[in-house]
Length: 370
Image 1 (cartoon, one colour):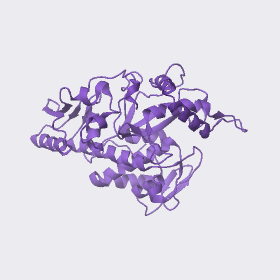
Image 2 (cartoon, rainbow, N blue to C red; image 1 turned 90 degrees about the vertical axis):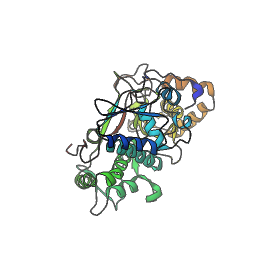
Image 3 (spheres, rainbow, N blue to C red; image 1 turned 120 degrees about the vertical axis):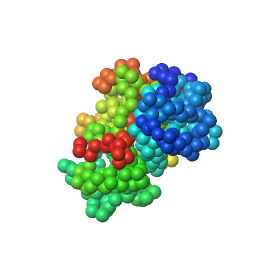
Image 4 (cartoon, helix red, strand yellow; image 1 turned 180 degrees about the vertical axis):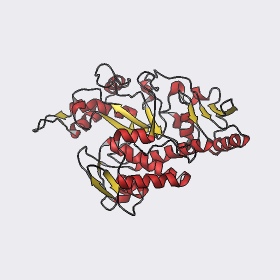
Protein backbone atom coordinates (compact mmCIF):
# COMPACT_ATOMS: atom_id res chain seq x y z
CA UNK A 1 0.00 0.00 0.00
CA UNK A 2 1.32 3.47 -0.83
CA UNK A 3 1.90 5.09 2.56
CA UNK A 4 1.83 8.50 0.86
CA UNK A 5 -1.95 8.11 0.62
CA UNK A 6 -2.17 8.61 4.41
CA UNK A 7 -5.31 6.53 4.66
CA UNK A 8 -7.24 6.55 7.95
CA UNK A 9 -6.83 3.92 10.63
CA UNK A 10 -10.31 4.12 12.09
CA UNK A 11 -11.02 1.26 14.45
CA UNK A 12 -7.40 0.95 15.62
CA UNK A 13 -7.00 0.08 19.30
CA UNK A 14 -4.03 -0.41 21.58
CA UNK A 15 -2.66 -3.95 21.25
CA UNK A 16 -3.73 -6.41 23.91
CA UNK A 17 -1.08 -9.10 23.47
CA UNK A 18 -1.26 -12.88 23.87
CA UNK A 19 -2.36 -14.81 26.96
CA UNK A 20 -1.05 -18.34 27.54
CA UNK A 21 -2.89 -20.46 30.07
CA UNK A 22 0.38 -21.96 31.30
CA UNK A 23 1.81 -21.15 34.72
CA UNK A 24 4.83 -23.33 35.39
CA UNK A 25 8.40 -22.10 35.12
CA UNK A 26 9.07 -24.53 32.30
CA UNK A 27 6.37 -22.85 30.19
CA UNK A 28 7.90 -19.45 30.83
CA UNK A 29 11.30 -20.75 29.76
CA UNK A 30 9.78 -22.23 26.60
CA UNK A 31 8.08 -18.94 25.75
CA UNK A 32 11.36 -17.10 26.30
CA UNK A 33 13.06 -19.61 24.00
CA UNK A 34 10.37 -19.08 21.34
CA UNK A 35 10.74 -15.29 21.52
CA UNK A 36 14.52 -15.57 21.47
CA UNK A 37 14.44 -18.00 18.54
CA UNK A 38 12.83 -15.27 16.45
CA UNK A 39 15.21 -12.59 17.71
CA UNK A 40 12.43 -10.62 19.37
CA UNK A 41 13.74 -10.32 22.93
CA UNK A 42 14.14 -6.52 22.65
CA UNK A 43 10.54 -6.12 21.52
CA UNK A 44 8.47 -8.50 23.69
CA UNK A 45 7.72 -8.63 27.42
CA UNK A 46 6.72 -11.87 29.19
CA UNK A 47 4.82 -11.43 32.46
CA UNK A 48 3.20 -13.94 34.87
CA UNK A 49 -0.51 -13.29 35.51
CA UNK A 50 -3.34 -14.99 37.38
CA UNK A 51 -4.37 -16.61 34.06
CA UNK A 52 -0.86 -17.81 33.18
CA UNK A 53 1.57 -15.83 31.05
CA UNK A 54 1.08 -12.59 29.15
CA UNK A 55 3.12 -11.74 26.06
CA UNK A 56 3.03 -8.09 25.03
CA UNK A 57 4.99 -5.63 22.95
CA UNK A 58 7.26 -3.51 25.12
CA UNK A 59 6.42 0.15 25.70
CA UNK A 60 6.86 2.15 22.52
CA UNK A 61 7.31 -0.88 20.27
CA UNK A 62 3.69 -0.95 19.09
CA UNK A 63 3.83 2.73 18.13
CA UNK A 64 7.11 2.14 16.30
CA UNK A 65 6.29 -1.10 14.47
CA UNK A 66 2.48 -1.05 14.16
CA UNK A 67 1.35 2.59 14.41
CA UNK A 68 -2.41 2.86 14.73
CA UNK A 69 -2.72 -0.93 14.36
CA UNK A 70 -1.15 -0.83 10.88
CA UNK A 71 0.68 -4.10 10.16
CA UNK A 72 0.90 -3.65 6.38
CA UNK A 73 4.27 -1.93 6.72
CA UNK A 74 5.49 -4.11 9.57
CA UNK A 75 8.03 -6.12 7.56
CA UNK A 76 9.67 -2.93 6.36
CA UNK A 77 9.84 -1.46 9.87
CA UNK A 78 11.59 -4.46 11.44
CA UNK A 79 15.32 -4.90 11.06
CA UNK A 80 16.20 -8.27 9.51
CA UNK A 81 12.51 -8.98 9.04
CA UNK A 82 11.35 -12.48 8.16
CA UNK A 83 7.93 -14.10 7.95
CA UNK A 84 8.03 -15.83 11.36
CA UNK A 85 8.99 -12.59 13.11
CA UNK A 86 6.32 -10.66 11.24
CA UNK A 87 3.62 -13.18 12.21
CA UNK A 88 4.42 -13.08 15.92
CA UNK A 89 4.69 -9.29 16.14
CA UNK A 90 1.47 -8.85 14.14
CA UNK A 91 -0.34 -11.21 16.49
CA UNK A 92 0.95 -9.26 19.48
CA UNK A 93 -0.38 -6.08 17.85
CA UNK A 94 -3.93 -7.48 17.79
CA UNK A 95 -6.57 -5.04 19.10
CA UNK A 96 -8.12 -7.89 21.09
CA UNK A 97 -6.32 -10.30 23.37
CA UNK A 98 -5.40 -13.61 21.75
CA UNK A 99 -5.82 -16.57 24.09
CA UNK A 100 -3.91 -19.86 23.73
CA UNK A 101 -4.19 -22.87 26.04
CA UNK A 102 -0.48 -23.74 25.81
CA UNK A 103 2.89 -22.79 24.41
CA UNK A 104 2.50 -25.69 21.99
CA UNK A 105 -0.67 -24.19 20.53
CA UNK A 106 1.00 -20.82 20.02
CA UNK A 107 3.96 -22.50 18.36
CA UNK A 108 1.62 -24.44 16.05
CA UNK A 109 -0.41 -21.31 15.24
CA UNK A 110 2.75 -19.53 14.11
CA UNK A 111 3.78 -22.43 11.88
CA UNK A 112 0.29 -22.88 10.40
CA UNK A 113 0.20 -19.22 9.41
CA UNK A 114 3.58 -19.55 7.73
CA UNK A 115 2.51 -22.73 5.91
CA UNK A 116 -0.68 -21.04 4.69
CA UNK A 117 1.11 -17.90 3.50
CA UNK A 118 3.79 -19.93 1.73
CA UNK A 119 1.23 -22.21 0.06
CA UNK A 120 -0.84 -19.20 -1.07
CA UNK A 121 2.23 -17.63 -2.67
CA UNK A 122 2.80 -20.80 -4.72
CA UNK A 123 -0.85 -21.19 -5.78
CA UNK A 124 -1.99 -20.47 -9.34
CA UNK A 125 -5.44 -21.46 -10.57
CA UNK A 126 -7.91 -20.88 -13.39
CA UNK A 127 -10.81 -18.73 -12.18
CA UNK A 128 -14.12 -20.50 -12.79
CA UNK A 129 -17.17 -20.68 -10.56
CA UNK A 130 -18.80 -23.48 -12.57
CA UNK A 131 -16.10 -25.92 -13.75
CA UNK A 132 -15.48 -29.15 -11.85
CA UNK A 133 -11.90 -30.38 -12.15
CA UNK A 134 -8.98 -31.55 -10.05
CA UNK A 135 -5.98 -33.84 -10.77
CA UNK A 136 -7.69 -37.08 -11.73
CA UNK A 137 -5.00 -39.29 -10.21
CA UNK A 138 -5.70 -37.71 -6.79
CA UNK A 139 -9.38 -36.80 -6.70
CA UNK A 140 -12.79 -38.18 -7.65
CA UNK A 141 -16.03 -36.21 -7.75
CA UNK A 142 -19.75 -36.55 -7.30
CA UNK A 143 -22.34 -33.93 -6.41
CA UNK A 144 -23.24 -35.46 -3.05
CA UNK A 145 -19.71 -35.83 -1.67
CA UNK A 146 -17.72 -33.21 -3.59
CA UNK A 147 -14.07 -33.89 -4.39
CA UNK A 148 -12.80 -36.84 -2.34
CA UNK A 149 -9.41 -38.52 -2.17
CA UNK A 150 -8.61 -41.58 -4.20
CA UNK A 151 -7.26 -44.59 -2.24
CA UNK A 152 -3.56 -44.37 -1.46
CA UNK A 153 -3.30 -40.60 -2.07
CA UNK A 154 -2.27 -38.37 0.83
CA UNK A 155 -4.23 -35.21 1.54
CA UNK A 156 -1.07 -33.08 1.45
CA UNK A 157 -0.02 -34.39 -1.96
CA UNK A 158 -3.52 -34.04 -3.41
CA UNK A 159 -3.94 -30.46 -2.20
CA UNK A 160 -0.47 -29.48 -3.39
CA UNK A 161 -1.03 -30.94 -6.83
CA UNK A 162 -4.45 -29.28 -7.16
CA UNK A 163 -3.17 -25.80 -6.33
CA UNK A 164 0.47 -25.58 -7.40
CA UNK A 165 1.22 -25.79 -11.15
CA UNK A 166 4.90 -25.99 -10.26
CA UNK A 167 4.10 -29.51 -9.01
CA UNK A 168 1.22 -30.61 -11.26
CA UNK A 169 2.24 -28.86 -14.48
CA UNK A 170 -1.18 -27.26 -15.04
CA UNK A 171 -3.79 -24.96 -13.52
CA UNK A 172 -7.15 -26.27 -12.30
CA UNK A 173 -10.45 -24.39 -12.15
CA UNK A 174 -11.43 -22.88 -8.79
CA UNK A 175 -13.47 -20.09 -7.30
CA UNK A 176 -11.47 -17.81 -4.99
CA UNK A 177 -13.46 -19.06 -1.98
CA UNK A 178 -12.69 -22.71 -2.67
CA UNK A 179 -9.06 -21.80 -3.36
CA UNK A 180 -8.70 -20.36 0.15
CA UNK A 181 -10.15 -23.56 1.61
CA UNK A 182 -7.56 -25.72 -0.16
CA UNK A 183 -4.67 -23.44 0.81
CA UNK A 184 -5.79 -23.28 4.47
CA UNK A 185 -6.32 -27.04 4.59
CA UNK A 186 -2.86 -27.61 3.12
CA UNK A 187 -1.21 -25.37 5.71
CA UNK A 188 -3.16 -27.08 8.47
CA UNK A 189 -2.31 -30.59 7.23
CA UNK A 190 1.39 -29.78 7.08
CA UNK A 191 1.39 -28.75 10.73
CA UNK A 192 -0.68 -31.79 11.78
CA UNK A 193 1.87 -34.09 10.15
CA UNK A 194 4.34 -32.90 12.81
CA UNK A 195 2.21 -32.03 15.84
CA UNK A 196 -0.91 -34.22 15.66
CA UNK A 197 -0.59 -37.13 13.17
CA UNK A 198 -3.70 -38.81 14.60
CA UNK A 199 -5.85 -35.81 13.69
CA UNK A 200 -4.29 -35.74 10.23
CA UNK A 201 -5.31 -39.38 9.80
CA UNK A 202 -8.90 -38.48 10.76
CA UNK A 203 -8.82 -35.56 8.36
CA UNK A 204 -7.57 -37.80 5.59
CA UNK A 205 -10.25 -40.40 6.31
CA UNK A 206 -12.92 -37.70 6.26
CA UNK A 207 -11.79 -36.45 2.84
CA UNK A 208 -11.88 -40.00 1.51
CA UNK A 209 -15.61 -40.05 2.36
CA UNK A 210 -16.85 -36.49 1.90
CA UNK A 211 -15.36 -33.02 1.53
CA UNK A 212 -16.03 -30.27 4.06
CA UNK A 213 -16.90 -27.08 2.18
CA UNK A 214 -18.27 -23.56 2.46
CA UNK A 215 -20.05 -22.77 5.75
CA UNK A 216 -19.22 -26.19 7.16
CA UNK A 217 -15.52 -25.57 6.43
CA UNK A 218 -15.65 -22.32 8.37
CA UNK A 219 -17.34 -24.01 11.33
CA UNK A 220 -14.92 -26.93 11.33
CA UNK A 221 -11.58 -25.16 10.99
CA UNK A 222 -11.76 -21.40 11.42
CA UNK A 223 -12.20 -18.68 14.02
CA UNK A 224 -13.44 -15.23 13.02
CA UNK A 225 -11.87 -12.14 14.59
CA UNK A 226 -13.91 -8.93 14.48
CA UNK A 227 -17.45 -8.05 13.41
CA UNK A 228 -19.46 -5.22 11.89
CA UNK A 229 -20.24 -4.05 15.44
CA UNK A 230 -16.59 -4.34 16.56
CA UNK A 231 -14.44 -4.22 13.40
CA UNK A 232 -10.75 -4.97 13.09
CA UNK A 233 -8.59 -1.97 12.16
CA UNK A 234 -8.62 -1.49 8.39
CA UNK A 235 -4.81 -1.80 8.13
CA UNK A 236 -4.46 -4.74 10.55
CA UNK A 237 -3.59 -8.11 8.98
CA UNK A 238 -1.53 -11.10 10.12
CA UNK A 239 0.23 -13.32 7.54
CA UNK A 240 -1.94 -16.41 7.03
CA UNK A 241 -5.23 -14.55 7.60
CA UNK A 242 -8.13 -15.34 5.29
CA UNK A 243 -9.54 -12.00 4.17
CA UNK A 244 -12.62 -10.97 2.20
CA UNK A 245 -12.81 -7.81 0.12
CA UNK A 246 -16.39 -6.92 -0.66
CA UNK A 247 -17.52 -5.51 -4.00
CA UNK A 248 -19.53 -2.41 -2.99
CA UNK A 249 -21.06 -1.96 -6.47
CA UNK A 250 -24.48 -3.69 -6.62
CA UNK A 251 -24.47 -4.17 -10.40
CA UNK A 252 -21.11 -5.90 -10.83
CA UNK A 253 -21.63 -7.76 -7.54
CA UNK A 254 -24.49 -9.53 -9.31
CA UNK A 255 -22.00 -11.25 -11.65
CA UNK A 256 -21.24 -14.77 -10.40
CA UNK A 257 -17.85 -14.80 -8.70
CA UNK A 258 -17.59 -11.02 -8.38
CA UNK A 259 -19.52 -10.52 -5.15
CA UNK A 260 -16.13 -9.97 -3.56
CA UNK A 261 -12.66 -11.44 -3.43
CA UNK A 262 -11.33 -14.02 -0.96
CA UNK A 263 -7.56 -13.89 -0.45
CA UNK A 264 -4.80 -14.84 1.97
CA UNK A 265 -2.59 -12.18 3.52
CA UNK A 266 0.99 -13.13 2.62
CA UNK A 267 2.80 -10.57 4.76
CA UNK A 268 4.93 -7.68 3.63
CA UNK A 269 1.85 -5.69 2.64
CA UNK A 270 0.87 -8.24 -0.04
CA UNK A 271 -2.23 -10.36 -0.65
CA UNK A 272 -2.48 -13.55 -2.68
CA UNK A 273 -3.24 -13.47 -6.39
CA UNK A 274 -4.46 -16.99 -7.16
CA UNK A 275 -4.73 -16.26 -10.90
CA UNK A 276 -1.24 -14.93 -11.67
CA UNK A 277 1.77 -16.56 -10.02
CA UNK A 278 4.32 -14.16 -8.61
CA UNK A 279 2.05 -11.11 -8.91
CA UNK A 280 0.49 -10.61 -5.45
CA UNK A 281 -1.74 -7.61 -4.80
CA UNK A 282 -0.94 -4.57 -2.74
CA UNK A 283 -4.01 -3.30 -0.95
CA UNK A 284 -4.02 -0.27 -3.21
CA UNK A 285 -4.13 -2.39 -6.36
CA UNK A 286 -6.78 -4.68 -4.91
CA UNK A 287 -9.02 -1.70 -4.12
CA UNK A 288 -8.58 -0.32 -7.64
CA UNK A 289 -9.28 -3.69 -9.27
CA UNK A 290 -12.50 -4.26 -7.35
CA UNK A 291 -13.62 -0.70 -8.08
CA UNK A 292 -13.20 -1.26 -11.83
CA UNK A 293 -15.27 -4.44 -11.85
CA UNK A 294 -18.18 -2.08 -12.48
CA UNK A 295 -16.63 -1.20 -15.85
CA UNK A 296 -16.34 -4.80 -17.01
CA UNK A 297 -19.98 -5.91 -16.67
CA UNK A 298 -21.45 -7.19 -19.92
CA UNK A 299 -24.89 -8.57 -20.73
CA UNK A 300 -24.85 -12.18 -21.94
CA UNK A 301 -27.20 -13.82 -24.42
CA UNK A 302 -28.56 -16.11 -21.71
CA UNK A 303 -29.55 -13.18 -19.53
CA UNK A 304 -26.85 -13.65 -16.84
CA UNK A 305 -24.29 -10.82 -16.75
CA UNK A 306 -20.61 -11.62 -17.35
CA UNK A 307 -17.31 -9.85 -16.65
CA UNK A 308 -14.88 -8.65 -19.32
CA UNK A 309 -11.56 -9.04 -17.52
CA UNK A 310 -9.61 -7.36 -20.33
CA UNK A 311 -11.59 -4.14 -19.82
CA UNK A 312 -11.04 -4.31 -16.07
CA UNK A 313 -7.28 -4.84 -16.50
CA UNK A 314 -7.01 -1.88 -18.88
CA UNK A 315 -8.95 0.43 -16.53
CA UNK A 316 -6.80 -0.64 -13.58
CA UNK A 317 -3.59 0.27 -15.40
CA UNK A 318 -5.04 3.62 -16.53
CA UNK A 319 -6.01 4.47 -12.96
CA UNK A 320 -2.69 3.44 -11.41
CA UNK A 321 -0.89 5.69 -13.91
CA UNK A 322 -2.84 8.67 -12.56
CA UNK A 323 -1.89 9.41 -8.94
CA UNK A 324 -4.79 11.74 -8.28
CA UNK A 325 -7.37 9.33 -9.66
CA UNK A 326 -5.81 6.46 -7.74
CA UNK A 327 -6.06 8.45 -4.53
CA UNK A 328 -9.73 9.26 -5.17
CA UNK A 329 -10.69 5.64 -5.88
CA UNK A 330 -8.66 4.14 -3.04
CA UNK A 331 -10.08 6.62 -0.53
CA UNK A 332 -13.59 5.65 -1.72
CA UNK A 333 -12.87 1.93 -1.41
CA UNK A 334 -10.82 2.22 1.76
CA UNK A 335 -13.81 2.09 4.06
CA UNK A 336 -15.39 -0.68 6.08
CA UNK A 337 -17.96 -2.54 4.04
CA UNK A 338 -21.69 -2.07 4.48
CA UNK A 339 -23.68 -4.85 6.18
CA UNK A 340 -24.70 -7.79 4.00
CA UNK A 341 -27.41 -6.81 1.54
CA UNK A 342 -26.71 -3.07 1.89
CA UNK A 343 -25.02 -1.00 -0.85
CA UNK A 344 -24.59 2.53 0.46
CA UNK A 345 -21.42 4.43 1.44
CA UNK A 346 -19.31 1.46 2.53
CA UNK A 347 -16.11 0.36 0.85
CA UNK A 348 -14.49 -3.00 0.24
CA UNK A 349 -12.72 -3.57 3.58
CA UNK A 350 -14.20 -6.34 5.72
CA UNK A 351 -14.64 -6.04 9.46
CA UNK A 352 -13.18 -9.46 10.27
CA UNK A 353 -10.25 -11.79 9.62
CA UNK A 354 -10.20 -15.60 9.85
CA UNK A 355 -7.57 -17.96 11.25
CA UNK A 356 -7.41 -21.65 12.14
CA UNK A 357 -8.59 -23.35 15.33
CA UNK A 358 -6.39 -25.17 17.85
CA UNK A 359 -4.66 -28.34 16.66
CA UNK A 360 -2.68 -29.99 19.48
CA UNK A 361 -3.84 -33.41 20.77
CA UNK A 362 -4.89 -32.18 24.24
CA UNK A 363 -6.47 -28.89 23.16
CA UNK A 364 -7.68 -29.16 19.56
CA UNK A 365 -11.15 -27.73 18.89
CA UNK A 366 -11.33 -28.70 15.21
CA UNK A 367 -14.72 -30.21 14.36
CA UNK A 368 -14.90 -32.98 11.80
CA UNK A 369 -18.54 -33.82 12.61
CA UNK A 370 -19.99 -30.95 10.57
